[in-house]
Amino acid sequence: MVGVTEQSASDPATPAPSATAPVPAPTGVPSVTARVVAFVAILVAGAAGAFIGWSFSDLQCEGDCTGPNSISAFVGAVLAAGGVGVVTVLGLRAMNEWRTVQARGGPPNRTPNKRPDPRANRTPPRVR
Image 1 (cartoon, rainbow, N blue to C red):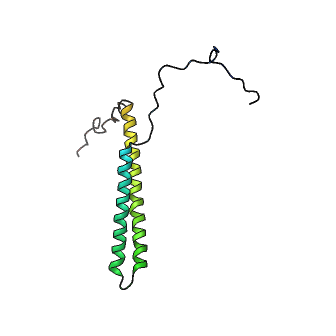
Image 2 (cartoon, one colour; image 1 turned 45 degrees about the vertical axis):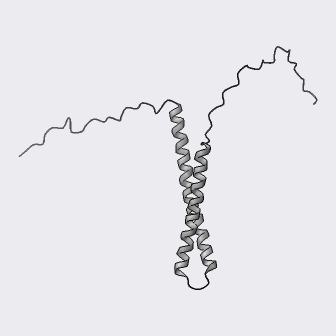
Image 3 (cartoon, helix red, strand yellow; image 1 turned 90 degrees about the horizontal axis):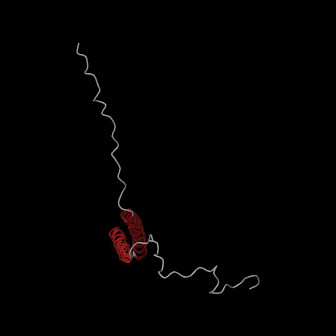
C-alpha cells in the first residue's frame, strides 16, 4: 500500500508484547445453561399453547374443523411462546444485573430514608 510504512520488531517505538494476556472484560451474556433453559421453556410454552388452542377450537366445532383447529393452535402457540419469551428475557436480564451487582461487591450501603415522626413534636389536643 502506498504511504504505509512498516515498523520492524527492533524499532524502539513499537511496544513489546506483554508476557500475560489481558483479562477479558465480563460480558453481559447469560450462561449457556440459562439460555438453554429459557429456550426449552419457550418451546414447552409454545407446545402447550398450541394444544390449548387446538382443544379450545375442537370443543366448539363440529364436523371437519381442521382449518379452524390449526389456526387456533397456531395462535395459541404464538401467544404462549411470546409471553414466556418476554418473561425469560426479563429473567435473564435480572440475573445479569444481579451478577453485576455481586461482582461490584454488593449493593451500596444506603441508610433508610428517616423522616421525622410528625407525632413526636405534636402538642396534645385541647379538651373543652
